Amino acid sequence: MKARVEAVVLPMIVAAALIAAWHVIVRSSGTDIFPTPGEVVTGVVELAQKGVLHKYVVASLFRVFWGFGLAMLVGIPLGLLMGWYGMAFRAFNPLIQVLRPISPIAWIPVAILWFGIDDRAPVFLIFLASVFPICTATIAAVRNIPLVTLRAAQNFGVRGPALFTRILFPAALPQIITGLRIALGVAWLVVVAAEMIAVDSGLGYLIIDARNAGKRYDLVVAGMVLIGVIGLVLDLAIRRLERLDEVRWGFPR
Image (cartoon, rainbow, N blue to C red):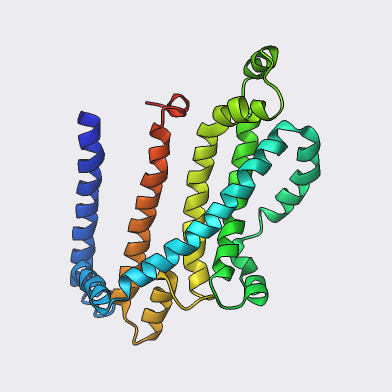
């Protein structure tokens, strides 16, 4: 119980201290450009009253949902196959290691060329940003399964598809979830960057549009704060998977 209270109270104390320091620094500097916390809150309320706040948020989440979902559908099965079958690993790993270091941002001109200025471009970029961390984490998870576990399953006649569904995937799932958590954070970063260039909606577009439209830095910072808060919520949501009975054994208490 004490740990749960501290997990809530301590971050709130830190956040309150940072907000207070932010307010004091802005006021003491005398700047009329960078907003105070109160002005940022006013900007968020303004966006909500105009009816655009939820549209920007939903647009960004929609793109992340599709790009990240497609990355899971491709990355997890591919990682399981590459982690188990040496031939598959030798065939595909060089290609993955060539593509993985390329920043998703570098793909923006190609994405616009292929898909134009619509949702497909950022979805494609999010897919690229997510699929390699997911695949790599899955490969490592399969290769880290204790050999005695695999031998015991085979001795009991577990082979073929059943070996994947009953042994490999459950044993690798804790590390896969960690990979998903990392990949989701990267996906959220990429969608904001993509929206600044490749589309005309979403939180990334909000930041660029607010800067260009009269240098509304209160809305710029409001967009940044919203990005951070939603990123925290997404991280907490995916961490709840760690509480499932099937994977709790793989995480420290």
